[in-house]
Image (tube, rainbow, N blue to C red):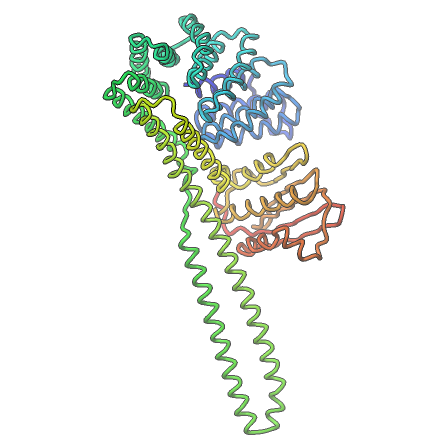
Length: 567
């Protein structure tokens, strides 16, 4: 319900602007930029997140060009809402905060209200960080009070009451509950009636008025079924089950807990359908292990053949020496040259094989990262959530209300769940898999920019272009490694990533204004991890050129041929 409210709020904001056809000029008129932002919001509302991101990022570019803070904040808000829609809460928070930064430079209290409300929703419902959620809800309430938006005031106070009740602070939450009970007929609607009854049930359960609590919980469930409010209905079943277990009615509590689990599973399944395209990654690590084995076998076979060839040449030489001294002299130089060539050939073969082994090892590591990321997200995270739920049920069934060890265990399980989720995203960037290399690299520049260093992104290639999965992963990790080197070693204040496409080759340039280094010092090159970068490039037949002058910065040029363009 509340996600829909956020989207409706954004639509109301964009509805302030008029709509004209989008111009194809270099920097379109403001009305055309507004129309582009409106289209992005409409696509986001229809859950067409990929196209919405395309339009919202383009609109953001033009809004920055004309220095319109309202439009900039609106575009960042749309981008954040897209990430919220695909459950990328960390990225959503990042862009909501950017939206808030620009909104604070405007006089639009409506805009400040909605962005603060969105942040409150994501901290409360997604991240379960209730104190932060309450903080942003109260900020939202300040601005909605200024604008006299009674509906928004009502929704915000309902959420604040819910947040206080969830952390057990019923005294602070009661003030807000009294307000929403009083104003429901004027400001509430069918989408809030379920939550309203559930909150009353929670309060009367806390105050020990069992009859009133039962009436409100059952009314919440009834209204939830009638209005098909699945999310609030699932919470109502959960809170009712907690109340029934406290009263000792374990049978009915179990029935409600089963319904809660069923509805939650349906909601999770719906969420998985939305993210189906994100999960389409093939993680066949065994194939890469077999490739390594084949390379090692080939290496041994080539060595054996070379040794046999050397032995044969020696036998021929002995026969020739025994026949004619003159022939020995004539063939002496030939034999020496042949032997030297064989040694050089052997060294070349060994070097190539070692490089292939390193290539295969890096590829195997990358596939292992994807496999581990998928396993952590789909298995470990689910197990931790299930463990926490069963522990709550156990406590309720055994009437354990004040056990320090169990509280600590719940906290540890929650922290472990968050850490596993964050680790999964770090191992395999979901933005790279879903939207492709250019979105991921643009996002990488934005994420690494801060008050100390600014990363600029420039590309003449259409952002929708996709390459083979292996190629995109290698390029992404190469650029990531280069960025890490700049941040750790260069002392630069500005860096720029430029990407072009020419004759089936991707041309990448990374420049910084840092302290530079001496490219003749081999230990510096190895320390910067450039050998691993060269190994990745060798796997795709790419090239790297490094130009650096002390105290004048560093330029790195990469040429990487792509085998097949998939879109």
